[in-house]
Image 1 (cartoon, protein in one colour):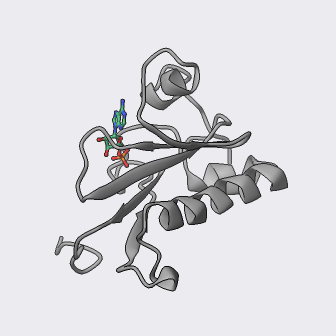
Image 2 (cartoon, rainbow, N blue to C red):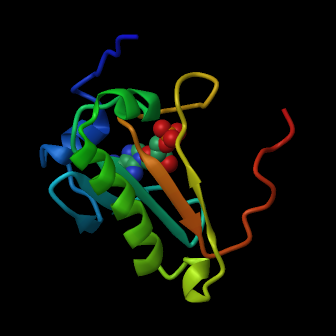
Length: 126
Ligand code: AMP
């Protein structure tokens, strides 16, 4: 399997500092920032800094350090945003859309962290 990454996608531009973002957390390997069109009171996107199109690309080609850094940031943001049920908060949902059926608009891996309201069942009826 080979993956093609478009370096002109909007999250690549955010990572290069070419367009602004509302940063929640930044580390060596990942960046978390608020979604520009939030779907819930908490709506944060977590992206790896490396050039990965989607989750399966990342899982196949990222280093162990990148994978650990990315995943630890997701958990950390859940706690920072006060949605972690482990901390007595009301919970959250993680979404990583990929490709056409996943309706992925931005071709740089991102995990949506959604919370702060009831989110309903996982999928709408097709
Ligand atoms: P997806 O359909 O999973 O690719 O979702 C892409 C998400 O990126 C959407 O929720 C958009 O609102 C969000 N988005 C697009 N441009 C920006 C931006 N410049 N800053 C923050 N979020 C953005």
